[in-house]
Length: 119
Length: 109
Image (cartoon, rainbow over all chains, first blue to last red; front, side, top):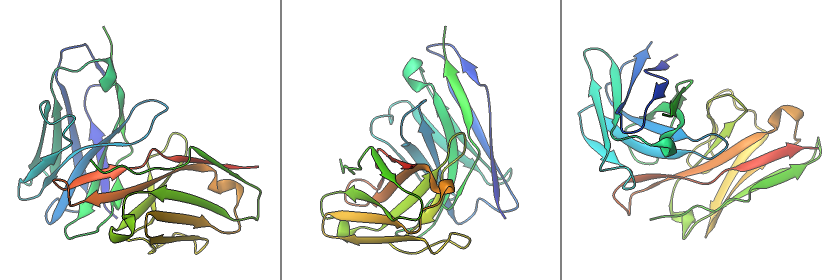
């Protein structure tokens, strides 16, 4: 079955840019939506945004000014960039797949990567 | 933006039934998903489109959705069901946002 693996730096300083990659294996990025979802320690899930395999994106309004999500179909990867991070961006970051079409769930999730922002 | 309301915690004895609610304005018109998250693990889909179960999820997990409340029901609760449970909808009335509830901690007594 499809596997998602997040990768990237685990420690950032305030004002730096968070850059994460989600590599999809045993499946294709084509025909799906790919979301990034984060979870601060001890708190709930927050949807950051998605990219469709076609390149179309949509973001959480609370993060829209700082977020870029992109897809590389040749590498079967999805990327997240979050600018000007602060301690409030410290969280576990997950990538998740959602099939195209209405009312579809996040059916596969990566194991997540912990990102800490600290000076 | 659309808001989903969940109780912070639910406690249930083994073998009994746990009901976790997810409130939202006319949520009955939306499709609701439920995810289970155990400590240190990624969320796992347990119910989608209000009441469907992915393969591998026990029949003890069921869902319903009507009016302003969706409900996840766990029958014959087991110790292994202790986890956080999140409801989620796709808000296509508001720029296609994915919305999560705050989560409910289910404790098995």
